Image (cartoon, rainbow, N blue to C red; front, side):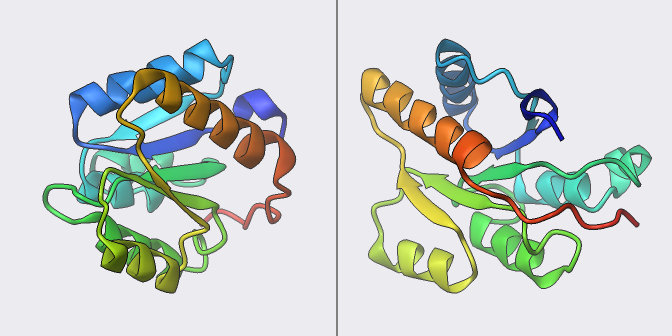
Length: 151
């Protein structure tokens, strides 16, 4: 799969953080398609081709999941647990991208199988740099596992 077809799933309910993340990736020439899920239920529906996303069945899974923890309907830790529990999604690189400063959130994220835990920088230039590094590492440098067969 070439770099440009590697979709990023951004799971984020805050519209300002969504805009900021999209802008930071664009500024850093991360041209990958980005799908935004605004809560945990929508994220799982997208990943497992359910509900509004039932038409996705058999389509490629995202190459990277950026997951906020504080989400409506189903929080990020529950999403992480569900992603890691399913063979189809178990190996997708997942980065917790959150403003949480709670050590317990970090420990739980890693315990449940997060590949990385990144605190959202408050300053835009720091956020730009974090997005640049995330994009370069997870989409270009990291060797992802082979894609599982689709259901």
